[in-house]
Amino acid sequence: MSSAATILRRRPRRILVAGGSGFVGSHLCDALIEKGHRVICVDNLETGRIENIEHLLGHPNFSFRSHDVTLPLRIPGVLHEIYNLACPASPPKYQIDPVRTFRTSVIGAINLLNIAREKSARILQASTSEVYGDPEISPQPENYRGSVNTYGPRACYDEGKRAAETLFHDYAECHGVDTRIARIFNTYGPRMCADDGRVVSNFVVQALSGSDMTIYGTGQQTRSFCYVDDLVAGLQALMASPSECAAPVNLGNPGEFTMLELVKLVLEKTGSRSSLVYCDLPVDDPRQRRPDITRAQNWLGWSPRVSLREGLEHTIAYFATELSQGGLAHQRVS
Ligand code: NAD
Ligand code: UDP
Image (cartoon, rainbow, N blue to C red; front, side):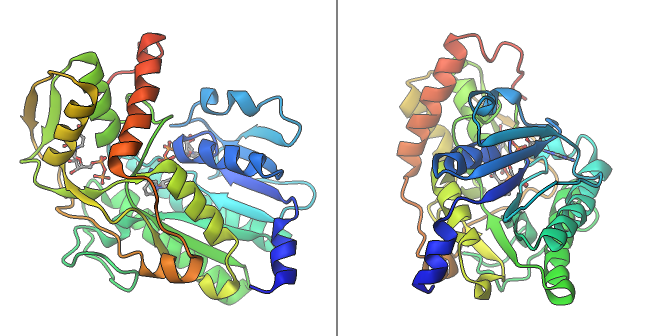
């Protein structure tokens, strides 16, 4: 990038974060505010929580708008960037109302792309490793087209995200919108909801509360876990990248673990004596997942820095505090 462009990028910008009160979105809002930007957080609080952004509410550069992205949105004034993170991400949550999840991905993307077009703002889509479905190759590079079931309980999310990527491509081609696409692999950390249903929050809360640890299937399936701070750095690097970086970019930590390895690590780190219970494997649960991050390394100079061990320590400390303050009392772990 030229030095003039670098200076321009460093200027404070006005940025819309859709889904900004969720787990990842709230950390992104923190990072953007910290850098002196003005942030408009748009969220309908479907899976997000006001507690995640409570500390930002009085900040002069931060505003919150309660809004559903499936409805058109008007943003007065200048807007430089849009991050689209608005969509439930946990399988049990996005399967509660699959039609709604699909609408959020597709109509939400159209509404935000229309704002980007109107304002000449750069827009980044939070896509997902789920676009690879149950992958037949590992690690997964961006040019792998995936193995996704169109007709099953995960399809509302996987196909919704795939359709959104298509819309980003088409708005760039047909309307000249400046787009970026991050394919995010499993990310974890503080501010996940205790009742979120994803594996890291489930295991940590179960271990800390002495409940049974729920292993789905044999526990031999793998995932690659990225700590939230690494992801937030990657999202900002992708947003700041030149327009040649419009094609999808994997963001994730290539360390690959079975769920049995993860559960052992959580038990070790918490010192818990919880027992393992084996439950049915959810339909279409991918058997393996690991990002090829060559593109992110070459295009963005980005690599994750936080090991699973270290990230788990931060996450365990967060949930331990929540537990001790009774903050999990209203949340049920599935
Ligand atoms: P999250 O559920 O904590 O956050 C999603 C946010 O979007 C919530 O605040 C929710 O209230 C909001 N939202 C949902 N539907 C909305 C709507 N119709 N209108 C306005 N707001 C709406 O999930 P997360 O883990 O923070 O994920 C953030 C984004 O990153 C999602 O788009 C998700 O698909 C993507 N992603 C996350 C992961 C991960 O492992 N965390 C992996 C791949 C992709
Ligand atoms: N999983 C599990 N126990 C749980 C929750 C999830 O064994 O309590 C498994 C799940 O079947 C999947 C993996 O952990 O194989 C990751 O699940 P998660 O919902 O976190 O993410 P995704 O399946 O979307 O990658």
